[in-house]
Image 1 (spheres, rainbow, N blue to C red):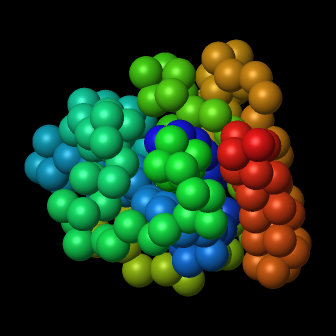
Image 2 (image 1 turned 180 degrees about the horizontal axis):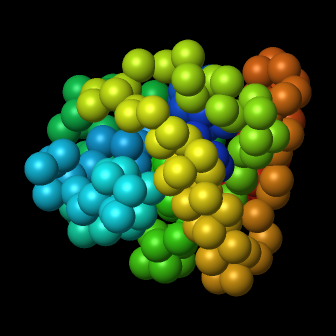
Length: 202
């Protein structure tokens, strides 16, 4: 049994979730672990001097719980899928050892957490310009909702800070242009990932 861990990171509203779901739908024996599922309760997220909740930090996330999920998958992907009601699909390879299980780790700070970064085999980062990001963010409804000035006062400055930190920690990240069509992005990453799977199978 072989495993491949793919990280899909990037800025808020950059297209991470759409790309992750597309890969999951097209590649057998894949599973998504999304960082957004591990936010701490709103009541414990700190507030800065401007009154903005500090969501765009690792401290706002249960990264220990996320790593527990990832490690559980790494130990036994087939059992992990079965426990979550996902039926294992038989690979074209005849040997059990030649099957490849794919874990897609998706989130805005996945490359800033070293223990998670260390288990990834491939890394992709979705990026879009400031104005497009702000427009997309304003069109979405969050719980709790973004207060006035939150994007410019917290979200964007933290993205720039986190990105600098990421670039200082990690190499080998493939940058993806989030302005390209979903179809084009999907085709590019799908080809890259499936080429790696074929290489692993030999």
